[in-house]
Length: 186
Image 1: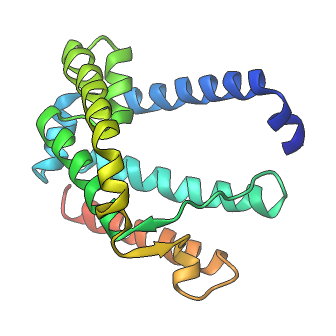
Image 2: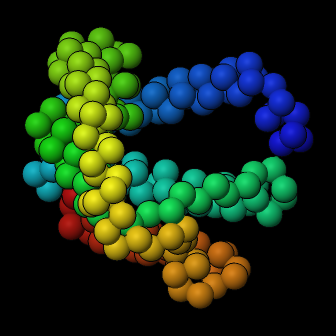
């Protein structure tokens, strides 16, 4: 089945577009394409964004590893490093803090007609991508290679061949976190 999908680029584009629209719709329905929700999360008084992200993480872990176990998906793990994580986190965090959108919520906000997301977000991402592409040769030879940790997964880090116990503990941790948030009225 994967071979058929890989050989039909148009089908990949159609599926990607449909999944993207569904993702944007769900973000919009969850309210996280609104600036107030994002700022509420950053100021730690509205935990809607964290709840949606953690729900997506749990669903994604279960879905990807289930599809992998059935031969319907393959993991393509990209090697990482401390330097790349720090640079990426800084770029993401600065943009997120200034504009109040991450790339996914920004695209959803553009879809619902938010001009700040269109002009600040899309234009900012294009300028930022251009700047990053310009300095990438320097970064790739220095900072991005610092602290290389290879193709690491959480189950691999914990020395587990079977990912399901790790997925179970992560999902249990997410559920406990949700209970704590609800008990605190957040």
